[in-house]
Image (cartoon, rainbow, N blue to C red; front, side, top):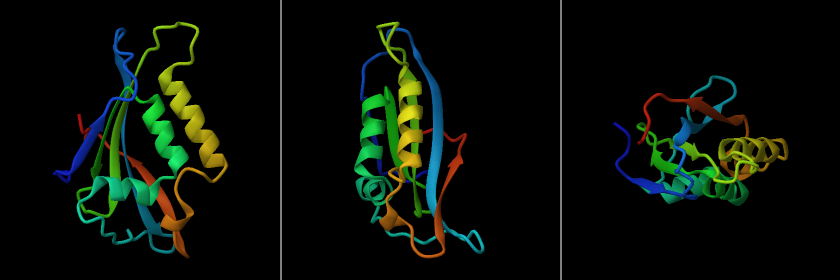
Length: 136
């Protein structure tokens, strides 16, 4: 079961045409040599876990582009998990929220501005995995 310390937000309210593209991911720090997961201590605080992993620009990307978003600490307590879904903008000429999130995420990752450098130590890397266990 996912940690009960969860936070749900709705960044934009574009739900008139439905909410689509729901995805759930888990982020953890792993050892590059043996893929072991780095033990973390977030004291059950989702905000601490989020700010440990993600840059301010990454968190802004989530908060701006998500129509539905919920966060949790992973079952093992060593990572952060989110479920995100996207509505359709009322203005048909506007960039779709899912595309805006994906494009911004890609640009931030390419600029090494998605996961904080301070979260990743020597011989470590961040790992993102898909999950079918959605938070909502």
